Every structure is written in structure tokens, then in C-alpha cells.
Length: 369
Ligand code: HEM
Ligand SMILES: Nc1nc2c(c(=O)[nH]1)N[C@H]1C(S)=C(S)[C@@H](COP(=O)(O)O)O[C@H]1N2
Ligand SMILES: [Mo]
Image 1 (cartoon, protein in one colour):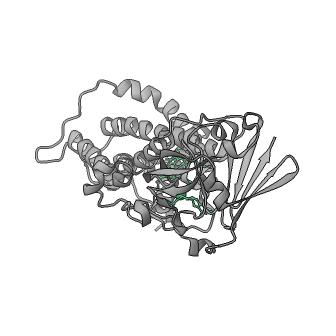
Image 2: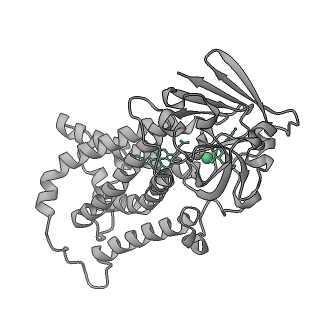
Image 3: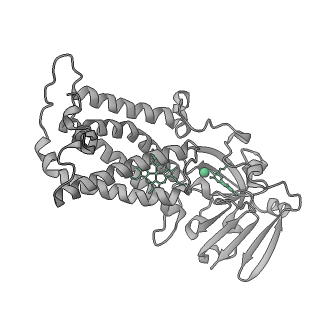
């Protein structure tokens, strides 16, 4: 037996209702969910890597909605992609397996498409499930492969356009009696997508919490808010001598907690909107960040630091966010003094911002003009 004989052949596949009619419809839905993932993923990227693209400071809920759509449409893609691969499976083994430059380019682009799509969905799902099983730092790899996936989708759509035209409006091909038809398979895939989305979205839309079987977060925690990284995990202890250091125009100013409490206090209803998709709203109270800094309209950026050595121990605040009235150095949460796990004595809280940038246990504000 030659090695090539071990490679499956299209005719080995049972004659089931696969093929163009089904692939086209699943492909269109995957096009929508992957585009939603890509666009919302870019939004998340530009929040965390501000460059030439400056995102607005509001509306307050925008990032919670955007990242909720990202994770929900990604999870809904899993059953759609699984059935899509099933619908085209025999075609991967069409002979000749290798041959012809154009054919190899086409097969190569499909290989990139399948590999990058599966990679994005699997690593994304593991990440939101809190199982950081891969040996690399997730965001840059997920970001790079996202471009690969969206590029491969564009090439795939262009290559398949003649077939799409031919299939468009065609009736569903008949199947043998007693056999599942293509419309049923399509409906099952859609049902799988809806069930996956609804059962994981309880930590994004509270109305879905009762059916949130697969939700990652329950919403429970001290002061009515979940904790992502506790003070113990971050190596931050209660510090009775805590002071806020303000570094601006080459000078250092120091403020005690009492001094901050004596300043005008403002409150804002804002969400923690984690990059992993869940969000939780609370009433925050504290000092406006812009009122701590002289001439805030002319600040380029404020870096907020904590003693936490982890990747989320510091964050950057843009001019727009600094000058938003809801951007606070929060001292209180839901009517009580902040608990240590939520960032006591002071944490940053600002509208339309990834949770990863809502720095807890703030000790230093560094102003760049
Ligand atoms: C099950 C599916 C998916 C899940 C659960 C998921 C989850 C996530 C999470 C948790 C982040 C935040 C990473 C961080 O900042 O720590 C993220 C970012 C991102 N995702 Fe996904 N994702 C999925 C699918 C996709 C797909 C299909 C694409 C593109 C085609 C995509 C593109 C992006 C991009 C561009 C970012 C921004 C990365 C950065 O900040 O540099 N994701 N995703
Ligand atoms: N110093 C510090 N601040 C931090 C983090 C951290 O690890 N260290 N985690 C961030 C992340 S990822 C989230 S989602 C929010 C969670 O805030 P909470 O624990 O008060 O709910 O805090 C952010 N602030
Ligand atoms: Mo987070």
C-alpha cells in the first residue's frame, strides 16, 4: 500500500446532505460573525494600543457592548464553523491532492483560512474560560492571526464568487426520503449558534443570567462586583501610610487619603467591562481625575501606576478620557469605602474603557504634556 492510499478519498464519505447549498448559507453567517469579531477586536486593540486612532471617551457603555459582541459572536461561530467544515469535508481530499499553481494557491488559501479560523476560536474560547493553557501571551498572537483570518476570508470569498453567483437563488437539492435535508442541517447549526451565544452571555446581559449555564462569571463578589485579580494575587497589601504621588512638570506632589476625601466628590454609574467579555455595573464615587491635575486640557496623556508588577498594573489615560466628567480616581464603590480587592484606597474608573485599564491600588499619576 502506498502512503497516498491512507489519505481519505471523497468517495469514502457517506452520501449525506453536504455541498454548496449548505456551505454558501453557513459561509454567509460565518462572514457576518467573523466580521463582527474582527471589527470589535480592532476596537479593543485600539483602546489598549492608542496610536494615530484615538477612540472617543463615550458613550460609557460602548466598550462593554463591543467586547460583549466580540466574545458572543466568536462563541456563536464555533458550531457554525464545525458544520461548515463538515459540509465541505470531502472536498479537502479531492484528487489530485497536489498539482497546478492556481489550484495550490487556492488550496493553500483555504488551509490558511481553516487553520487561522480554528486557532482564533479555540484560543479565544480557552482565554475567556480562564484556561491559559497556551505557552504564549494571548493578545498579540490572537491579534496577528485575526489579520490572517480576515485576509484569508477575503481571498476565499473572491475565489468562490463565480460559484456563489451560480448557487444564488438555487433551490435546495433533493435528498433521499428519510434523510436529513440541508435546510434541517442549516437550522441545527443556527440553533447551536444561538444556544452557545445565549448560554454564555449571562455575564454580559443580566436578563440571560438564569440560562447562563456556560457563563464564565456569576457576577458575585465583594460589594456586588466580581474580582478578576485579588490583592493577594497581585502581591498588594493594605498600606496605612498610602499616599498618592503626582508627577507633573518636573515636580512631585503628594496627597494623603484624607486630602483626597476632602476634595469635591463626584459619582458615576459605570461598568467594569473586562476584555474577556463580562461586564458589571456599579456606582463609583471619588475625585475627578481632571480636578487633580492643573490645566488638564493640555495634557497629552496620564500614566496611572500601581505596585502590582503584572501586565495590568498600570494604564494610560488619553486627553479625551481625562477630560470626561465621569473619569474618577474612585475611593468608594456602591456607597462603601473600596474593598482591598477592588483597589483600596484608590482606583481608576473611566467610561468606555477595557476593564484591564481600570487600574486598582493606584499610587502614582504621571502626567505627560
Ligand atoms: C470564540 C471566539 C473568540 C473569543 C472567545 C475571543 C476572545 C477575545 C478576547 C478575550 C480578547 C481580549 C484579549 C485581551 O486584550 O486580553 C480578544 C481580542 C481580539 N480578538 Fe478575539 N476572540 C474570538 C474570536 C476572534 C476572531 C474570529 C477574530 C478575528 C477574525 C478575533 C479578533 C480579535 C482581535 C483583533 C482582538 C484584539 C487583540 C489586541 O488587543 O491586540 N477574535 N478576543
Ligand atoms: N493593579 C491592577 N489593576 C487591575 C488589574 C490588575 O491585575 N492589577 N486587573 C484589571 C482587570 S483585567 C479587570 S477586568 C478589572 C477588574 O476589576 P475588579 O476586580 O474591581 O472587578 O481590574 C483591572 N485593574
Ligand atoms: Mo479584565
